[in-house]
Image 1 (cartoon, rainbow, N blue to C red):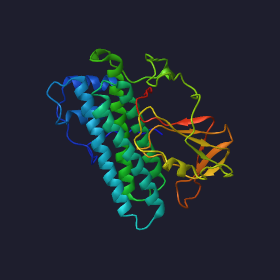
Image 2 (image 1 turned 30 degrees about the vertical axis):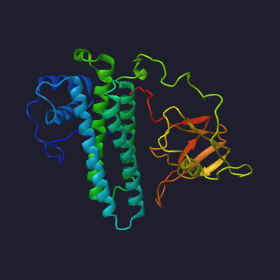
Image 3 (image 1 turned 90 degrees about the vertical axis):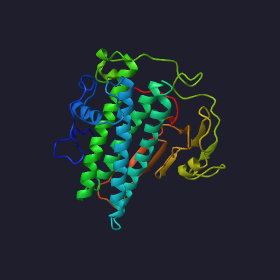
Image 4 (image 1 turned 180 degrees about the vertical axis):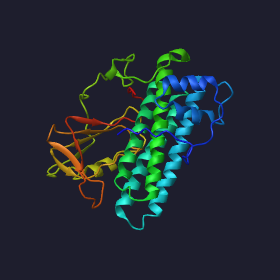
Length: 316
């Protein structure tokens, strides 16, 4: 799902843009997919000095992303308050709020942890996750887009997606070209023949694939013949909060179809699901109440589903 929502002079989220510095114009045009939006927001930033450095522009773009996400959060709460008992609208809004919470967390650790430590790969990973969270919010609200408030909120989320995309694009160029802004380009991936430099994995000794010699912490099973949980969510809930960054919590999920929505909260770090294989371990469930023609979401655990909450890299 791709949104291209550039603010116009009639948009409620548009403010008059003063004549922007040439550095902002050049970078936004060269390195972002939504340059007009980039120029608009950065030129109106009160945080930037007259001649900002590339890193200062990135910090400002992250600040705009966070502020816009908080505005969306407020709008979604208004949707809930005006839902008048509509369970579908309430459920969809709560789903959006959940991913916005995750997004704001990742924007925060990008700003306050990854960038100060010059960990640009992690910064790009966190912002990539934020971008996905924002599209998830759109997916949720689209199902209940039957009021003016929801429509306006969706429009704002569309702008948030584009703002997040711009911040991610700036991070891409800064990661690859540093302060040499003359070389900055639109973000690219291996899909168009661009391969970034590969650095050593942040996990000692890990070379990809399914880690060997895993020690299972808890078991989930349909038959309950062994000491185990019947629901995957119950097993997730037993995982300790905010564990050491290199300590995995392994949940072994035996063959079966588990009809439930599984949520792994932010504080449950490094939770690993280990299934029995393709078509054997399946988690399926619907997030919507009574809506017609809703296909359930499904996860097939071929071998392993690994959630890492620290220091892993990804291309934009």
